Image 1: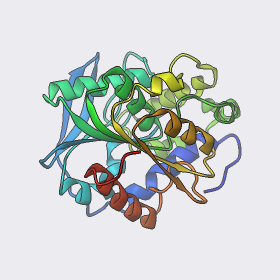
Image 2 (image 1 turned 180 degrees about the vertical axis):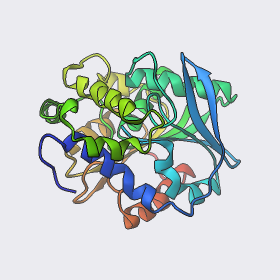
Image 3 (image 1 turned 90 degrees about the horizontal axis):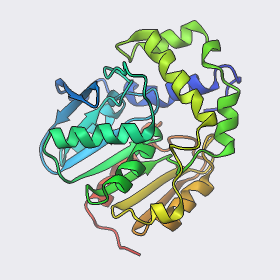
Image 4 (image 1 turned 135 degrees about the vertical axis):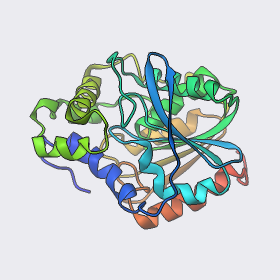
Length: 284
């Protein structure tokens, strides 16, 4: 995936990030969509299978369906909790309130509603940022977290990309393509894009320092591409150094959301994450 012209970079990158998983998931098992009224919204989610609970959090402008390619392997061993995060997919956001801290509060409230006191979790990009909040808000709630292309804070590299991409200049056909995954259509997508665009000036949501990261009790797997367009790989090393019981997988020649955007990468990711979840790895 190459960087695209400035006017479409932000929307196109996240659209392309989601679509490879969805394209390969036609035969994935499905489960009924549920909804929970929490924190002033109706949060849509799927509850799939049985076993120890495993929460799967998608990235920005994605939906829970982005995980469909992983459901057969992960669902064979775990009870999967797969939400559409606030403002995404079938989870609308009438309040307009949108921070990763709020997303974390929503997921915690959903786990409370489902009477899940302890779970493992995997998050991609925005989903990984949400997990950092969850793991610091309630350190005993999560047994393990897997952070794919996450960041403890927004670096200038990401802010520069946001500044070059005005959501109101995204071509209509691209918005309509993205809107197919969201029940609120183009207005919902535009709301999301404007909210994320505002992160170019945000300094009070993603602000994790090494001492804060050091409070994380969950075993942590950090997965990061060495060619990430938004978050340089140095941020993955910062998290690895700060989080006590952590592991680091740097994906060679990997861009944002590596390795889950290719069939081979998804196969490798599934194998590695199942080993990690099983607790077979040596602690440092």
